[in-house]
Amino acid sequence: MINRLEATRYLVEQLSDEPIIASCGNPKFDLFTAAESRKANFYMWNSMGMASSIGLGLAMARPDKKVIVLDGDGAILMNLNSLTTAASKAPANLVHIIWDNAQYQITGGQPTHTAGKADIEAIARGAGFKKALTVNTFAAFKEALSQILSQPGPWILVAKTDSSKALGRPPKSPVYIKNQFMEALRGA
Amino acid sequence: MSKRPGAYKGEKLEWPHKIVSLLKANDICSISFIPDSVIGRILKVAEKDPYFHFTTLAREEEGIGIITGEYFADRYGVLMMQSAGLGNCVNALASLAIPYQIPFLILISQRGELGEFNACHVAMGKALRSILEALGVQHYTVNREDELETILNGAIKTAYTSEQPVAVILSTALVGWKDEK
Image 1 (cartoon, rainbow over the protein chains, first blue to last red):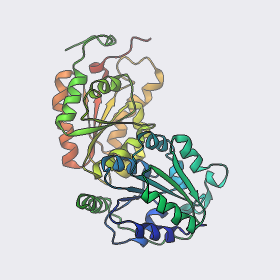
Image 2 (tube, one colour; image 1 turned 120 degrees about the vertical axis):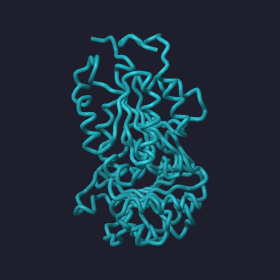
Image 3 (cartoon, rainbow over the protein chains, first blue to last red; image 1 turned 180 degrees about the vertical axis):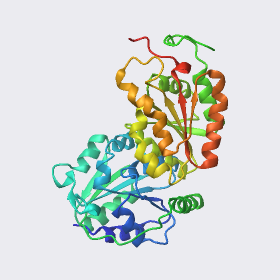
């Protein structure tokens, strides 16, 4: 199992000013802990499931930048149709990482369908993604990331994570978050 | 031009051309949509102009996210859908577009009002404006072609001034309805 915070820290170390869209719940909490001062982070406080769609829109409008989406299994299960849209548009700069701990961790650890039969990598391939990987260890995550950041996508990376608590709390003003993020994008 | 409701097939329509040229005049280059027969007529005109980027959605809610992502990169978008689609968009509007202040045009093809043949479109059609109002989303209805320019230009300007989505509803009084009984 991968520790989500450790993997988030490693990811950010590999990046420069690429935009990151962090889904509501633990992906954004750990992104804030890993890279509090990073301006090109977009923190979602709700709209569960929309991270993949925001990332697609940004990737299409900014083909010069790799766009990273940090999603959760519960969130992507709520917007699976977005995978069909992203695969059809297929922007080469889209990197969609799904932290899959097979549970709704933030609400008490109730199992999601990935705890049972659902396989997000297989769903993504069925949606039309040609490049989709699943990793279970930190070493495999690092290896996958080196491939993903050096080769055109769009990419899906399902990282099987543990359920360590995420303690970070990003700013709570949506407009502050948006303005900081857009300034970072305009400067980049 | 005026036309007889229910008999739009084969008639020369001006409103789809007007809508497309008004979008372009307002720098809206990205069209995210779920088609219906009305949206389809707008797309048919827009598709001839390489200025526009098109994203076919699988569910209307995705469009809120996609337009938000495009807006982050200073690309302006319109979400085109039938009134039924608003029901699929509510939480993304309430918890993404409204609090993060994402301005864009929502262009809605009205069902469930004048000339409806399908009972299953009526409840959502009747609820459309109440839902928008409950969310605080401003909305304007176009009934006649001569209102189109004022309403579209005005709605788009207000969206950008307020940094909020604004809806424009295309009535069947403008676009016609199916002859089906």
